[in-house]
Length: 149
Image 1: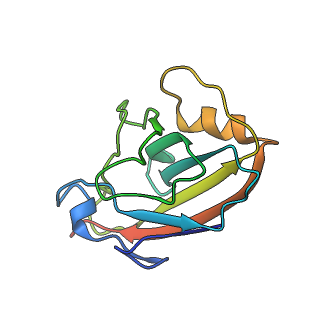
Image 2 (image 1 turned 60 degrees about the vertical axis):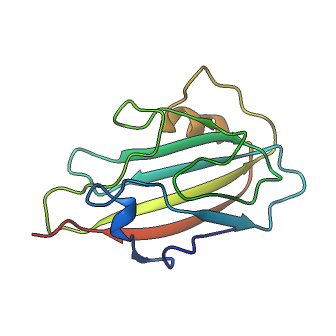
């Protein structure tokens, strides 16, 4: 499985439009080579560099395996959105502190062998726990971003 974005290269800088200094939109994403055995996909976006510990920026679950991406500013159609670290059911735009220190943003896509069951709005840890033993494949995309110092 492959995960990519037309907005940035793997390991490249996240354009400001997708951050707190821009329009706070989620970046467009696309994926391919999804296993025909996948029953659903899960998308998790985290910042492992936050001083207080990893920050969950986006939790998207129950993505239909026939979907091949997410448009700019939106979750894939038919998917559910879980709760990010700010307690919101949406994309949390990167806004790394302290200024000047670049953070890494890891976009992870998982193909699940079975539909996963959650409450109304799962958190990152709940999705990761449900994926244990149910992951057919995964893909990662990395972006970096730093506020001016």
